[in-house]
Structure formats: structure tokens, C-alpha cells
Image (cartoon, rainbow, N blue to C red; front, side):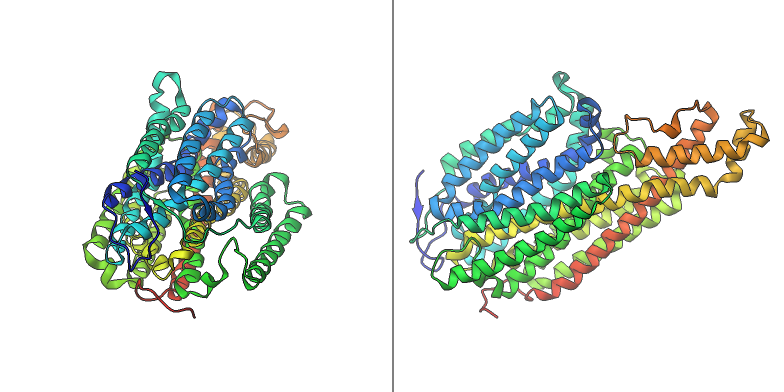
Length: 550
């Protein structure tokens, strides 16, 4: 079905198969969101089989989102140049094959490379969907079409961990964690066949030329910012990490200057600078960066708390997040009843405030429950957080893209989706780094605070009173060093001695308590990010409508 649509939105009748096409586009959104999150749950199982340090789990997410963030700016432009349907097909097919490569990986390096390839093909695939929706649907229908992204993104972002936990524990065909990638194969085939049959081709009246230097500057800037954030903690934060961060900011500054000059010379920029003079778009980028950093980064920290701190299986950890998925469904249903159109930005503010309340409730629950924490106790806070997410995300895309002109669609879609992915990678890097930096000190602090309890345990174990201070100091050093060790299979020198069973039980309790405190503090950072997103939301217009440049 090679229908070519070239007219403007005012001249164009809605595309006949637009709702079926929307379903195809949402299918690849599901693939993307599942793959952005499933390695958080499956990460410990992957690391146990393939080896490597805890930073491997961070890189499984960061390699994907970083590659996608780098490629999305280019991916959106490629749709303008070569046609959105063609680029959608190439991206979906490549993403599916890269998923097969990930599922067959035998080493950590192979898996990280496979994840990066997934991200690059995803960058070609995803921006085409947003662009096609804007051109397939009439302005009156666009709110409903973009509104469909909300529930799909919410359910995928929270339901993904449940699916991942089930697939890992079920161990279908002895594949274990590899099934989280093999599950993409039928989805990818469906997307390719659906695109061939139902997606129309869109071509600009004047195809722009690709900005090669802009591509290199954007890719370099993103890499310079994110690489030190992910690796800095493991390497002890050497000076060069901060040099790279500063260099990344400089490169993005040069990118901005270069793109503006290119536009003034009448050449095609990678990102159209005029977009940033639109209040809805520039504000949306800022909100999206912070919002998705909080959302995706918190998901990683929650996984570590459940699986490493509390010892939950992948399936139990995934099921623990299910109330958040149900809450997000409720939020989207409420938003879809007409609130999104009536309230506009106010609904985004309400949803973000509800998420902040849910995050505060989560922190309070973990603190009060202590060792008696259970999935049941977390349900109220997770439901509230999910409901807020549904309310906040429902109007987001329509508000941001409403004032974008047809000729800016490819650039705008690529930039918006790129910032979404960059925010996720930033959240994983920052919140993951904060979490792992806190755990060793919190565990050691709990050993210090429970000295009397430890003396009782040592006395029961038959340790002489005069040697107990040395044993206590040695245990404290052992637990601190083990939590600070990047590779959990490596036994620190301070842990060489034999630990009696009674002391082992005490040590496990202190580790759990340390993870609990680190989780609370890191959730506090997420709360601050959501508060920042709340404030930045006032940059958005009150309603989703075409607007003049400001």
C-alpha cells in the first residue's frame, strides 16, 4: 500500500486506515519500552550467567538508551529525506534482528554491543511513528491518537518488569533471561507486516539534506555526558570524568551555534532551531528530560532494592510493580474521559503532583516497615504513583507537538523522542550512581548503630569478650568492602575469615537495612526531580494548540 501523502494538514483528509496504522505504530513503542526496562529485572540473572560487575546492569540499559538518544535526531531527519514508512520498516526489521543477536550473546561485551545496535535501529524506527500520526490524523483527532501513547507507555513501562520476571523464572526451552529478547521476534514480524500493509508513505515536497557534522556533534556531546556518569563510580571518579562532563556541555553549545548558523545560511539543520522558539516544544523538552530521568532511573533503583536488598526472585520483583501498572491504567482512563482536553497543562501538573505524593508514600512505607516490608505494604504508594504517571503522560505529547509545522515534524519527533531516551539514560546513570555510592556507607553505619546487638550475637556464638571489638571491626570492614565491590563474585581481602551462621544472619540483616536506607535517599532524589518537572511544566502552554513563535 504505497500511498504517498504530500498535502498539508489543512488540505488533507484523514487517512483511511489511520487507526489500524496507529496500532502498528504502538506495537513498536511497546517493543522499545519493554527493551528499555526489562534488563533492570533480568540484570542480576544476566550478570550471574555472563559474569561482570554491577555496572554491567547499568550498561545494559545505558547502551540501549544512549545509542537511541544519539541516533534519534538523525532518525527523524532520515524520515523527512527518504520517507517515513521506508525508515520505519528498516528500523523495525533491524531492531528485530538485533534482539535475536542479544538473545544469542555469550559474553557481556556481545550483549552490550547488541543492545547498542537495538538502540540505533530503534532510533530509526520510533520518530517515524510520531511524525506519521501528526500527518495521518486530522487536528481534531490528534489528541485521541497521541493520547493512546499514554496507556501503552504506562503499561509497558510498568508491565515490562512483570513480563521480564515471568520469562526469566519460567525458563522456557532452557533460555532463561534470553527470552526477554526472543519475545521481540513475533512483535517485530507483526510490525513489519503491518507496516507493509497499512502504513502510508509520507514525503516532504522538498527533501532536506542530512547534516553530517551536526550528527557527529550531537553524538559526541551525548557520549561525553553519559559515559562518565555510568562509569565514574566504578572507576573512583577520576579527574578525567569531570573533564568529559564539561567537554560534553561545550560540544552541545557548539552544536547549538552550528545549527543556528546553518539555518541562517539556508541549509538544512539536523534540529530546526526555530522549534526552540516555540514555547510548547522547548518547554516539553525540558519537562521530558527530567520526568523520564525520574521515571526510568527509579525503576532501576527499585529493582536493585527488591532483588539484591530483599532477595526477591525476578518474578516476585516484577509482580511487586504490578500495582503501579494498574494505577497507571486508572490514570489514563480518567484522563481519557475528557480531562486531557479540558485541563491540558493542569492535568500534567496534577499528575506530577500525584506522582510526588506516591513517591513520598513509598519512602515512608519503606522507612516505617523496615524488615517487615512486603509487596502488600507497597501497594498503596505504587498505585498512587502509577495513577499520577497516567494523568501526567496523557496530555504530554499532544501539548508538545501541537504547534509543530508539517515541515518540522521529523526534526521535532526525533528531538522529543531523543530527549525522552536521553532523560532515561541520565536517570539510570545518576540515580544508579547515587544508590551504589550510598549502600556501603549505609551498611557500615547500621553495623555501628547495632553494636550492642552484635555483641549479643557474638556472645551467643561463643566469641570471647576480649576479641569481640576486633571481630566487630572486621565484620564492618567486610560488609562495607563487599558492598563497594563492583564484581559481587570477588571476595574482598577483609572477608577472608570464616563467619559463623549466627553472624551471617546478622550480616544479612544489616545489608538489607543498608539497601533500605539507600533506596529511601535515592527515592528522595527522584522526588526532587519530579518537583523540578512540576516547576518546568509551567513553561508549557495551557492548551494543546498551534501557536506562534515566542
